[in-house]
Structure formats: structure tokens, C-alpha cells
Length: 142
Length: 411
Image 1 (cartoon, chains in turn yellow, brown):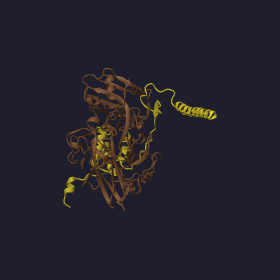
Image 2 (cartoon, chains in turn brown, blue):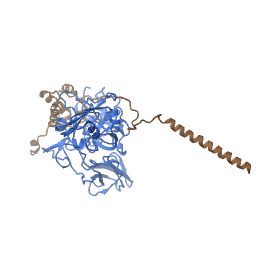
Image 3 (cartoon, helix red, strand yellow):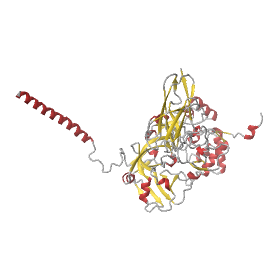
Image 4 (cartoon, chains in turn cyan, green):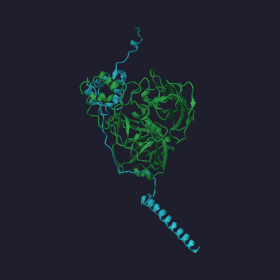
């Protein structure tokens, strides 16, 4: 009886020590993996923030078809934007391209004189446009 | 590049894809980051150049243009409630976009009709003002422009110039209070670090009315989905104007001007204007004489699944899923039609994520015949605003017509 009681007590002590050791270790490890000190004002959870952000941009400018006006386009239009801005557009009638090129001058201050505007419009229409369909011609009987 | 005449050009787009055209032109300027030039042209127009490209801090997105970059998010990302930062669409106006920001020197200044002009650092914005968390939807004013008929000039976005993200930031109201808005202020305008290419080019700057700027909801965000903003989405701070189109969400926000006179510039008086009609609608032959700046989001629903290219099986259950959005009033109902709008059934709405977030909707559908079906979806918000079947305006802005999704069901 006495022996049994000693064994039970010893067992209980052993379990307690084991439990403490294991529990203590996980808790110690958890503590160790945390930052030494929380910021006083945990305003934002931003991580990996370095003071300088720097990216490099590659341009993927497509070449454009040769033709009268290509040089003017390449010098005057590409100052501000990639030729891809034209390739992204639908095939427009002349009057839409005329308005678009004029918008670049009037709205965005592109240094394109009226003669150059015509050259650029002709160039755009030649490979990415179509002539205006006259309403008059369309309504004529066939 | 020698012989790339128009016929060859169009033929190569139609038959071989743009990679063939570009290869045929021996273009040396296509960098390695353009990984695939074969985005399918589902509308058969064959005129738009779209390729995949991977930009810094970004995943593979559909590139509409490269300088300045216009990048569109592929549809499948909208299966997630928050659009990942690396997949969030990109749109800049001028090629002179910021590529290098030093937080030790970057400042957002508050100037104009204020008692105390401010120079706020990134840490000032994070630590001196109460942080606000908000999930908000945004989209380019020209999102879906590609679908307008007749076609409209401008970036030919399909449905991916949009996203939903969780922001943390300082209330604009609190920042303006710290500066002390003087009596007589009517507007507050916003500029970013991006530079116009020429002296004569108008600096990109957009205004809000003073009442709007002082409301609770406009924030200066420094965190997007738990991370710093990607550079291409406006690092380090961008204005978040929830419920309004992205043209107001000024990126790399560097200058806030309190004004006693309304701002007039190209971006207010000429660009980003819509007809003063319900649903931004006008006749293409007789465009509206009266226009106003585009402002709030219009109510609409969009399909996310099934994708247009997927073939469906007869008698198999289809998970129809999409998102619905409005100006923050709140989506009340989404209906789906599987017979091109003849009959409608209510879709199940997911719980509200946040006031200005999009809301997800779902419906199960079992097609019983092997044929083509025209699916449609239509949203209604708490103010009763819903969608129409046709819409056109000269700028290709604010498209919210009922979407039709043609799907093929096979035996």
C-alpha cells in the first residue's frame, strides 16, 4: 500500500515535470520567434517595407509599317506614347483619326503643326484606318 | 522590318496571331517579358493588339500598351473577393511615371487655402492619423470600352480594368483638418508624382468638391491587401475615392490643393466627360451637347464563370458566378437569364463584404439541351438603379449595359 502510494506520487510528479517542460518549451519557442519588441503604435501591418522602391520598366514598342508619314509619326507621336497606343485601337475611319490627332495637339500640347497633322492622319489611315463612308454615297440607289 | 504591308498585317493577326506578325517584322524591341502574344480575340475584330506581359511587382497581365503601361486583369482573378496586388489593373496617362520613390524624401503636401500648409511623409500619414480599413471596388472609367458599338477611341479595355482591394489609410478629412481648411474653400484637387511629357501638356490633376473631400469615406491609402502598394498602383500612397471611378484615385499622391475657385484643366473640362443623361447614354449620330465629369459608379453585374471559352456539358450542373457593384448604395438584387432576357431568376447574394466593395452572386444551372445559350445578368441596387440593354457615349465611359454571355453546351 505504502509502495503504491509512493509510486503514484512519483508518477504524478514525473508527469507534472514532463508537462511543464513541454509546455514551457513551446511557449518559449513562440516567444523567441516573435519580434523583441512590438512597435508602440501598431498602426499598419506593413512588412518588407524598404525606404526606397525602384523598378525598371521595359518598353515593348512594336515596329510600325513603313510608308509615307512613318518618320513624322515616329518623331512627333512617340515623344509621349508608344506606337502600341495606335495598334490597340480599332480600325477607325479618317474622321476619327483626324479628331484623335487633333486632340493630341489641342488637348495634350503635342508639337505638331497642321501640315504634319495631315501627314500623320494619312499614315494612320493607310494601315490602320479606312476612308470615310459618305452618307450621301451610301443612300444612292445601286 | 521590310515588308509589313497592311494586308499581311491583318492576315497575320487573323490567321497566325500577333506573334507571327511581330516575328515577321523582326521586331527587336519586344523584350523577354512579353511571354505570349496570343490573347484570343473573341469578338473577331482582329484589330486590337493585346499581348501578355509581366511588369515589376506584377504577374502576367494583358498589356494594351507599354508606354505608359496599360495592363488588364484576366477574368479568373475575380473569383477571389480581393484582387491580388500583382494582378490589379494598371493605367497611367503619361509615360513619365514614377519608377523610384524614396520614403525618406517623399512628401504629400497640403497647400492652397489652408491655415497650415503640410509636408507629410509616409510615416506621418501612417502614425499621425487614425488608420481606417476599407474594402473598395474600383474600375477605370473606360472599362468595357471595347464593347461599345460604334467603336470609340481610347484604351480598348474588355472587362479587366477593375479590382476589389482592402485598403488601410488616413482619412482625407483628418489630413485636411490638420491643415485647417480656410473659409471659402470649394474644391480640393489632387496630383501625383507622374509628370507630363511636354511643357504644354496639362498635369494630371482631379478635383473633389470640398464636401466630398471632407466626408468620412475618402482616404489616403498606404496599404493595399496588407502590403505596400505596388509602384504601378501608386506606391507609396494613393487617394481612394470609394464609389467613384478610378480617375479620381490619384496615384503616388504628392500634392493636395485646397481651392477657393473650381479647378479647370483638360482632365476636368475635356477628358472624362459623359453626357448629362440617365445612364451616360447618347445617340452616336447626335452626341449630347451637355456633358459633365464622370463621377460615381453605375450599378452593374458581371459574369466571372463560366468563362466565354469554356464548353459546358448537357445535364451537368454549371456554377454561374459573378460580381455586382454600384456606388456604395448597396446591391439589393441580381437576376440571371439563360434565355437572352426573356425570363429572369434571382441569383443568391454572398454576404456584403464592405459598403464600397463589390458583392458576389451565384446561381446553379443545368442546361438540358446541347446548343448555344445566351446568359444575361442584371443588378439592382438599394436605390432601385438597374441596367439597360443599350448604351453608347462618345468617350466610351461608364459602360453598364446588361452583359450577355454566349456559351456552348455540348452533349
